[in-house]
Image (cartoon, rainbow, N blue to C red; front, side, top):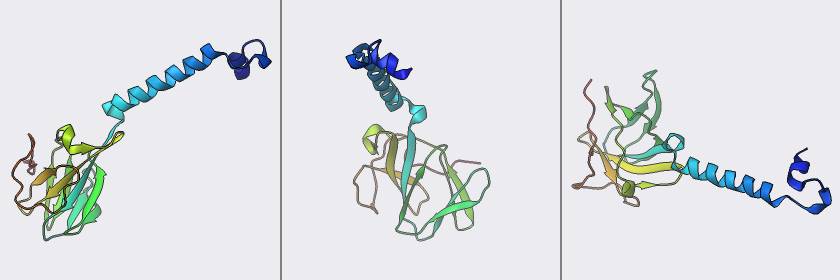
Length: 150
């Protein structure tokens, strides 16, 4: 039945260009919609640990650690509702703030680089910045991230 729709009444006549063009237009609109829909974009943070302690990534719901970032290393992960970290015996949560687009890279998976410093603040870094960065001064609005108050 599908070949009847594409080829019309005569299978030897070749594809029906109107039907094919409709499929192409629908596909283009789907790709465009997915590309601009924030609900379908994954936001990630590539967090560099610039402290002298291992930093555990903590699941907000279970309060269990699911990964560790050793000092001088980084980890990329999805940044839905912010990030919860365990540093030593202290667990802290940082609310999500998206930096300006100039700080982000990617199309369907948007990533930004950041650095956790000894002052326990998360600093946004421009793409391609070599880490660790010393003496970070300029930050976009909302950064550096400070732990939220409980």
